[in-house]
Length: 380
Image 1 (cartoon, rainbow, N blue to C red):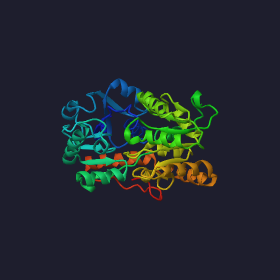
Image 2: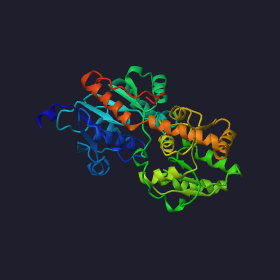
Image 3: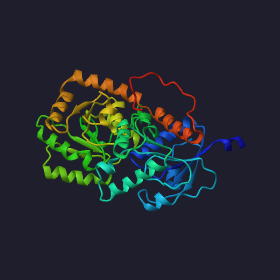
Image 4: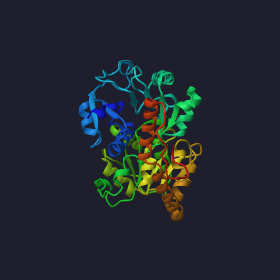
């Protein structure tokens, strides 16, 4: 037992373990650390009840209660009480405590609060946080090069301090072989799929307008991941007098979601701004073709494996969707490329990158290099 205590102790801000994006990221990294234990001990801070429910089984970690609201001054300024020596603090999102008194490694998943603020004050708030991070963090992690470049150009972050970790294919990676049935509404049906929360940058309105204008596309649109905002989308569809049937899916567990992706004719992902865009990789991993906006970071994630449209020229969406639906050969080509792409972007690699950043923070040097299998170019 005593040698156990020679291992450095990493404390983790795990308050967002349930979140659809950041929570997935954190859970998947922890799941890899449960399989390949890292060279450090883990203490997770959040709601102990939620941690017991959501932290992957088999992870050797202690839990401690620390649960101020995520975007709050109290979270930013009043640290959790550490009952023992902690060597570094890791947070999978930037709205964490800036005054932990130990070296800080923090993920900036996106700068959407700056570029597409959904609430007044968000922009000021995020700028304040990022300034503090720039001054205090040992390393800042991003999932895409796109966000790394934004941090360097918009905020003047030092490139050597910003490390790109990539991400894996969302929650589906572990369930690709499961045969869970799709929800009743989708049984034995063809449908187009859209996945995402209801926010302006997700471009839902654009999506419905385009589908409405394409008389030749009669497929229903199944919508997942909307949370409590499903009714808002339904209302929008009614106002527009949407000709396509809309199927609002209830919250899905990872197995169900995997089946929904597998059976979909295509994933339509018209979002024009993201930090990452997990659904793109999720769909590719299940062998479903994807249509994305020709913008970063979506392009960076897909790297030539998705159908694209130009957001400034709306009709390019219609053309791309028609090719996807009618050109068998093109579709098969993109599906094959997508499967390959999703394999490159693994959670194993991401967990390794996060681990390396933490070890560099604690020891001042990179662990011995492991040689990754040669690949065209994974994210990170």
